[in-house]
Image 1: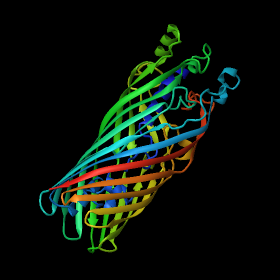
Image 2: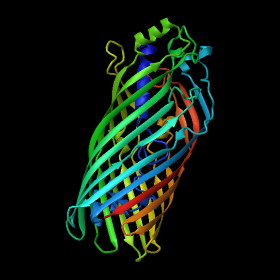
Image 3: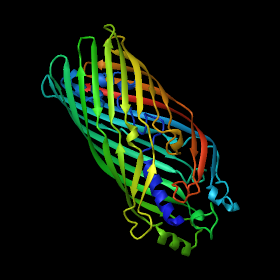
Image 4: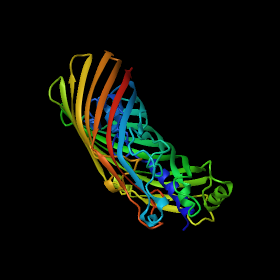
Length: 458
């Protein structure tokens, strides 16, 4: 297999894998920040119905708590920090005999590769009767931006990742009796991504070129639709206690896109033509991805007329994401037409506890703590995925201007466990990292989340 064909494959696989890469929000690439009111108590009890109709994102059965016509508008500013230090890039040991194949150049520290992003949310609910509720939600459940400078030491692994995902979900909930309610939602999901990484054309042009002297870029733009569902139930055995159980079905998505290459400006025309002939040419590709299922349980217990205590647990089956299968749809006649990249993510648990204090008819205060596991294991962490276990500390407040209008504010600081990069390549030319090189480094991660919402009822 030629260096040219292998890197064509590597570039597309790396970019496609980055579409589903986390920064410092929820586990994996989720954005749990879908309710400004529930942000304040770390989403404790949200599966039991939460504080308002925004809980329909987590459990559609929770709508039966509310009546009339209601709207909830929200936005969460997610401001992550991903600081890299002690970075080092080296090339495969198979090339150690050649002096030109030594360390990869570039800054060894990077102050922050993550960019702030706003996750909007919109909810509406209409009471068809006292017991039957119709809802609609629009959310951004996944999404982030990371970007490195073009001389970053890990540039062959990642440069820019920009992901936007929007869910539109009509929902229906029915109160069977005083104790039991059930709910269902249909989910239509749209994903759009732009991703880039550097290509060391100097390496793949061996023996006529020198590594690191002919850098170009590979860029993938893609979009797709996917469809899924949510199921939920709530149970209220007493006036003081309410519990909820919800399931978000797994979703298989096919990301279809175009890959393009920017060639180094100092590369002679015959060399560029040779790259194109080997497969470094604009074309198409697709990737099949298995997205996880969520199973969540929550409770809300009224300790007194002014204070309630909540808890939440959620299991996300990230272990479904074992491999990324990529097919190069426009590489007919070339040696490589598909690739499998090992991901080997793990299932994650989210746990939270919180409290809500009704100070007076106008003011409500909230607080909460949570622990959220990272989905990526140490041997598979990349610059696109500086993931780690998180601890949440949340505070929030609501103010009711009237019975029909109130505003919510929530704040969370995420303490993320320090993580390391340890990407290695073997001497085998079939190793996906053969042309990217080895990459090590340390990450310090954290995030601040500011959520603001407004509720209207009629």
